[in-house]
Image (cartoon, rainbow, N blue to C red; front, side, top):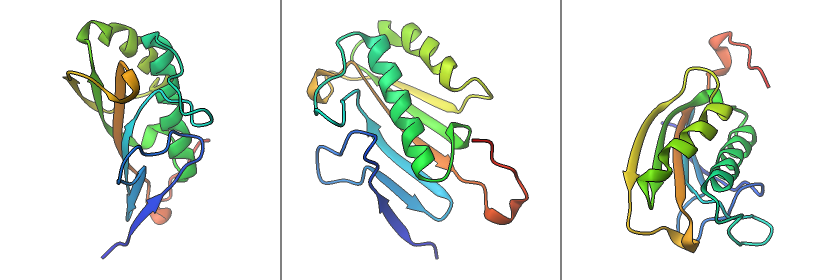
Amino acid sequence: MPERVSIFVEDAPPPFGHFAQVLKFGNRIFISGQLPIDPATGRLVSNDVTEQAKAVFKYLTNVMQACAGQLSNVMMTRLYFVDLRDYPAVDKVSKEFFFFVPPARTVVQVASLPYGARIMIEAEAELAPVDAGMKRLI
């Protein structure tokens, strides 16, 4: 049975409650909802949803790199919006980061998000087994 390992990534916002920022279970990576919060200041990066999306996708990238993976390992994303009218702008940013076959996606509108954020994204990834004979491009 694989071991559950909690991972903390300094280049992504810390959890704001009692939960793992990232949980690794075997080759699976579970990334808690990433908010557009600057890890150094603890403040919202911007009120602009495009800038918020760029920050969140950058944090997802940082988390995957810290877990010896890359965004192409992401199989599923869940996007939480305060206003679904922001979806086209975030989808455009997503294409800049997931320029290959994109992951599966769920989109949900919520009443509010922590820190006044307009978007939050969580993800699940599968790291290639070491013996799979795959080359990982970084």
